[in-house]
Length: 74
Image 1 (cartoon, rainbow, N blue to C red):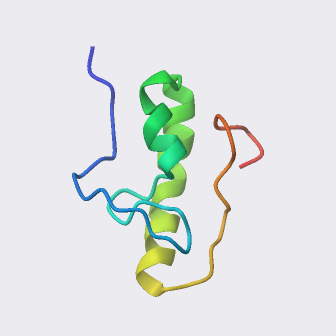
Image 2: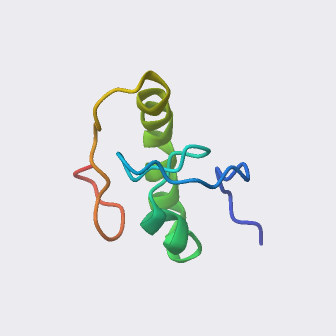
């Protein structure tokens, strides 16, 4: 079974936001990716475009990364 991943092999965490500049995930999300349920991975992936846009624009951190597993409040 293949697990969908947003990884594009540009694995560098932005020190200001904690987001990967390649995919937009946090280090915690990257490390736990395989353990997340499919719905949790989809919820994280839905937030990635905004995170990447913020990184490219140099904007202040928005949607602070959730600690632990994805939740409905994010």
